[in-house]
Length: 107
Image (cartoon, rainbow, N blue to C red; front, side):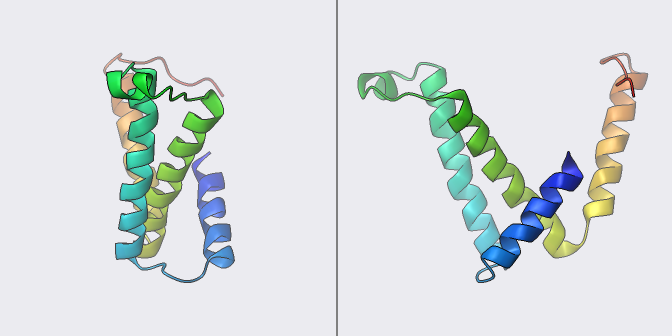
C-alpha cells in the first residue's frame, strides 16, 4: 500500500507542481490534520459538532486520513527517505510480532 501512496504523491506533484517545498507541505499537513480532527470530534460526539448537525461518513473520514497520509509521504519524498521510512515500518512490525503483540501477516 505504501508504494501506491508514493505513486499518488508523485502524480499529485505532477498535477500541482507549485508549492512543493516542505513548509507548504507542512502547512497542508496541518490543514488536513485539522479536517481529520473535525471528523474524529463528530464521530466521538463532540457537543458543539452534534449541536450544529455535523455528520461524518466513512468515505469522508477515509478521505481525510488519505489526505494526511499523502502529505506525510510528500515530506518523505522531498527528503528522499522512502527506503528509511519503509525500513522503520518493517522494524516496528517485526518488533510487534516478536513481542507477541500482533499476529504476523500471512502472505
